Length: 334
Ligand code: ASP
Image 1 (tube, rainbow, N blue to C red):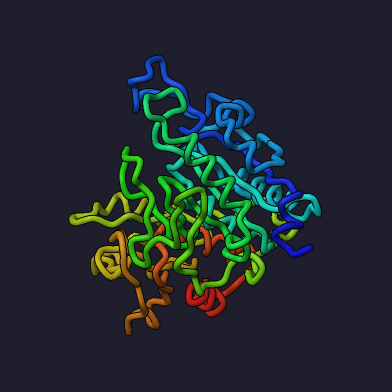
Image 2 (image 1 turned 30 degrees about the vertical axis):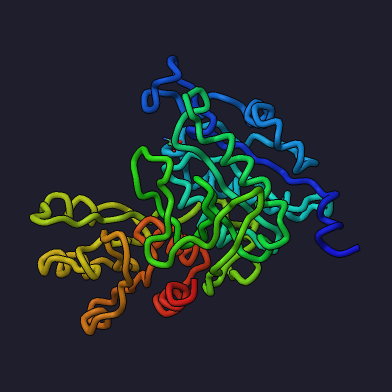
């Protein structure tokens, strides 16, 4: 029996975490004033009978929240649950339903912390389950058929919404309410779903899952280090920068201007900190690379990760006890 045939008999495990895909509003025309995380994963599954074509399926409910309420502790629980499921002989892949607001962060966290070749696919929706033209049912069907497809193996964590396939590292939410919200602005979609099949065009060369030194999560990682983001803007206030400096953080990511730039006076303030500082950019796309002053300031650079994802990699590096050199090496390779 080849791998594809063998895997057809195995299960796809669907883990529900909440989000708009599990959302409900009082009126089916209300696309914004709904409660996310109102419906359980079993109800989501039973609302899409076509999923029967991709069984056997098994469901688990980790939590049922609006993903804006996601926490670092929940990331640890989710990673450990996914690791447990992919380790099962009878499981071919995992699908996670999740709110779209922090999906890119959860996806990247799992991409770095779950050790497997099996497909892990995340999906959600922009319209609640109760809405006219809800997008959740098709997104869920697409996620399950992708998790079932042999081509999805070895690609790390994949995000699918609106018929597109994106790499967890590069995907980012682009629109507050539109169903076409997820894209990878710098490198593009990895593929698309059409005619009931996933079609693949590009793969990321960056390390993930089986090749990640952060996967699986060590048993002694009970909490993640506190890492925050300083968002810069024209005319940034001294009080704001002072208040950030006073926080007991173990690392800091700068959502800098343009090429991750800090106003001159902010640079002087921040370089006094004795914690790792990573320059990223508030700009939607592009690389932040080392500048001559970074050596003097001891600033690290986020490469092409956005500030939210740079924070995740920094937390994982700090959890491993990495110093500046190892941290920068991680930013250069993940
Ligand atoms: N606020 C929702 C959430 O992230 C938005 C969504 O799922 O689209 O849970």
